[in-house]
Length: 300
Image 1: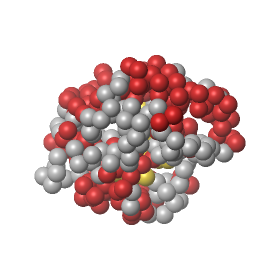
Image 2: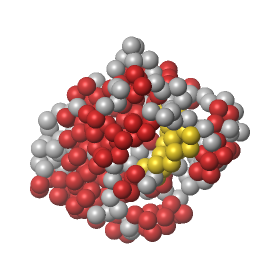
Image 3: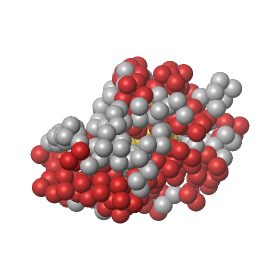
Image 4: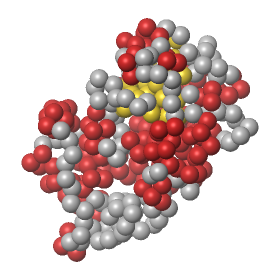
């Protein structure tokens, strides 16, 4: 992150004044939502298409007035992510935006040199991927497999970097901004020694980002194959979770039928009792690695 004023930086890839009169070339927002999703956004997020750009400008004005040195993107599409994540509550959206940048600046081990090519070993391990098909609610399913990580190869922060970039890529989609995502975490084979790397410091940082520092709606977290030690892991996590998020955790153990109540087999790979073929990580890896330019300036 550079220290440029947010009133001089307007997009992850270019800097220019925030004053609309001084910025005739600001990218013009064009809504890509279907009619159904426009209706869903109105009902669930309080997003009114006729007031959308007014709301964005209101948030932009608040940033320039209250945080003139934030160094943030001020494009319509970018600010909309934060408004949608906080149901168009200006104050809460502003705080989320401030937290977003604070999190990135306060954890250099995660955010320095953050780009897809830098976390290629994590992607190739299969630690995190995104299933090819959406669930019935139109949500992407992010699959996390801690057993794919070998601690002697790289620190746990590399896994966090990979998850963060995955979320950044997903949230570029307006559909994801409205529908949210689902997480599927497979704890098969996770030992106590591996779990010990996820201590209170890391837990607090990660939960802080996901709850209060990133504009994404996490609608469900499905945990499968969790060993008995997971109770200890969850005991570390739970104090940092808000009640709403804690209630979205579902522990299925080895019961795939229970998992299928939340994620239908038709979109799941064979490894999880699904009918969508073998789990293929190559498509998501290729997509993310091809997005290098999206992140070069945003995370510089």
